[in-house]
Amino acid sequence: MTPSLGGPSTPQNTTFTACFSVVSETDPNALSRILEPFTKRGLTPSHVYAMRTGPDGEILHVDLQLADADDDTVRRIANDLRGMWLVDTVLTSEKRYAETG
Image 1 (tube, rainbow, N blue to C red):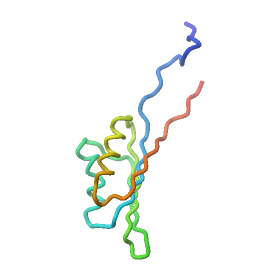
Image 2 (cartoon, one colour):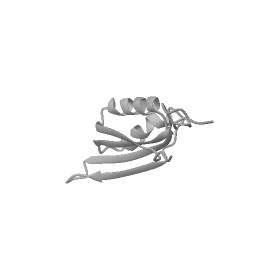
Image 3 (cartoon, one colour):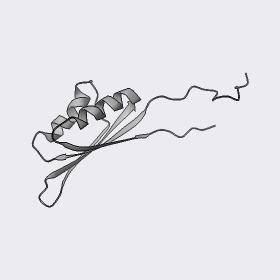
Image 4 (tube, one colour):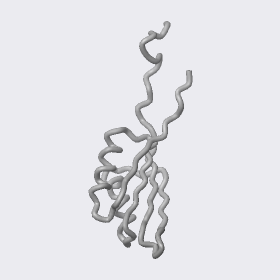
């Protein structure tokens, strides 16, 4: 069967690896609170990296990745993170495999 010219011959993968970059105040509860939106959805990030920065270590940078994510889940997690009083900034991006053809 010949694929139509209007689209790909196979369905596109709708899942991807979501990347979250979170900047928050350094607090003993900050890391567990940042992980909470994942936990309450039964999700385990595939990568977590946290580092204190700033002259006195007052800023916490947390980078997380979530494999096999979808747009709706990423949007909900990012909104939950942005609503936290400790969190200053949440940036999101995604990694997908390149289309081959």
